[in-house]
Image (cartoon, rainbow, N blue to C red; front, side, top):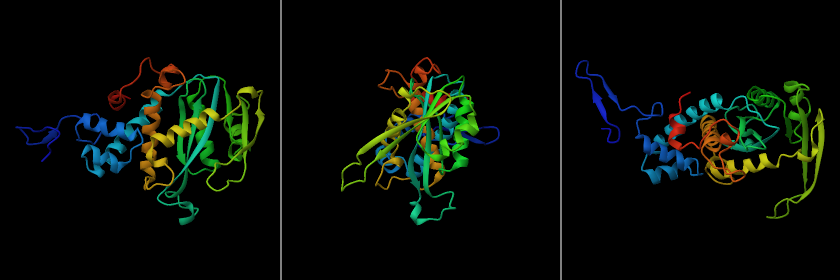
Length: 292
């Protein structure tokens, strides 16, 4: 018996159906689904959300999957023709199922994974994201997606990964942008102390980039928000993803919520509003019911 969503039976043909819900395949009451998604966007794990909402863990996962698919479609539709002067790109590490040492290098579903992020320095908008293994093919795919979403010339700054600076950026963008890299050098970690920053080296790679603003610090700060507000990225816990698809759904949900719903302290607006994509701050319910 469904005690949450009203069900009906057609008197003519006997077919049963439920009240319409904003998330495809989810019969849980819309407000309860939104509450669960809000908790996920604030860094809570699946089990914690299940305990606080009373929903079964499988139900919370189904809500994540449906909301993640919805958010991925919204991002693909809305984040287009972005105009900004400076873009920064970086990757954030996590693992799926097990660490790389416990699987093989050709395992495409488990082991080390990286979430590529490209952000606008001015609006803080996450323009493009990709969850994949870090290699040349996936880096090119990420850069190609970034190129499709941009409108006009801009300056790109990345770290010194050879997947970017040994041809990746030039293969995708040619000479159409200004491109620079920032490489940070750290000392050997000692006991429980953080690694000491020894130096920074910035190099122009393509065109005539403004080296005074060539940095990845703003993208690295966004990486911190990802780790803070997505349980699956929290280090040294059991909250890591067990399935690759669920990690991708969680990232899509985080990026959409970050862009459209979360007020950024840098300018007091959501990144999407600062970038001119929308004219207001979205409520969580609007994110779930937005038409594509």
